[in-house]
Structures are given as structure tokens and as C-alpha cells.
View 1 (cartoon, protein in one colour):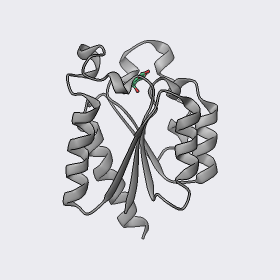
View 2: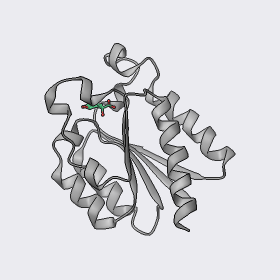
View 3: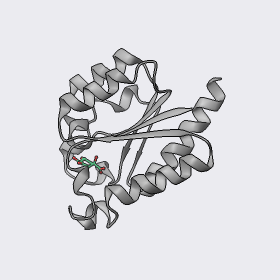
Length: 146
Ligand code: DQA
């Protein structure tokens, strides 16, 4: 299977950014661990982080025919981006939305997601481990659809 991991704005600041909310691990730490997990189960994992909405949209568009599943932490674009939603609908690649923090236990504006209702599932509040759970769930989903 081919799985794309996408991380949105400010996730390049993990480890430095509000560690009491997002944890001490850097994005590199998280991606390296996820790559190890992917390698042990023979899954191809590609990663892309961007602070720019258009770059994330381009990455989604370019996944058409290239990726079987997307794991995405859209950062604040979760709560703002109809364009990212439309890109995911356009390619119709199944995806899991993930957040390190529990977005439901924070400001009210983080409760709404423009992606959640079209996601296979949403993981939030479980910190960096959420990425592992997402990879596990993605592989299970792919195994049952084939
Ligand atoms: C986040 C939650 C978002 O509300 C926030 O804008 C982020 C990170 C998370 O992983 O908890 O940038 O997606």
C-alpha cells in the first residue's frame, strides 16, 4: 500500500510550539517513528509538510493514482479550508483526519472541521501516538476494501 502523510501549518514547529498542548516530540521524531512502523509492515509512506494551503492542495491533487490512503493533520486549515475539503473530494482517496490535541476540549472554533464528515475517521487528543493509530487503521481499512 501507498500512504501519504500530510501535515499542515505550524506542525513544523512541533516540540517548540506549545509543548503542553502538542507534546515534546518534533515533527521529525514523529515522521521517523512512523516510517519505521511503515517499513515493518511493508507500507510505502511518503511525507509532506507545508504551511501553505495551495501546496497541501497540490499534494492531494498529485496523489490521484499515486496513493491509496491519506493521513492528514490539516492544522488550522481544518477549521477554515473548504478548498482542502474540495481537493480531497476531487481525488476521492480515503483519508483519516488527525490532531495531536483534543480539539473538542479547547476553543469553540476548533470544534468545527471542514473535513471530518468526509473522513473515514478522525483521531484527536491522543498526541503523537495518534499517528501510529492512524497508520494502523489505514492499513486495516485498505485490507478490508481489497
Ligand atoms: C491541531 C489542532 C488545530 O486546531 C491547530 O490549529 C493545529 C494543530 C492538532 O494537531 O492538535 O495547528 O491540528
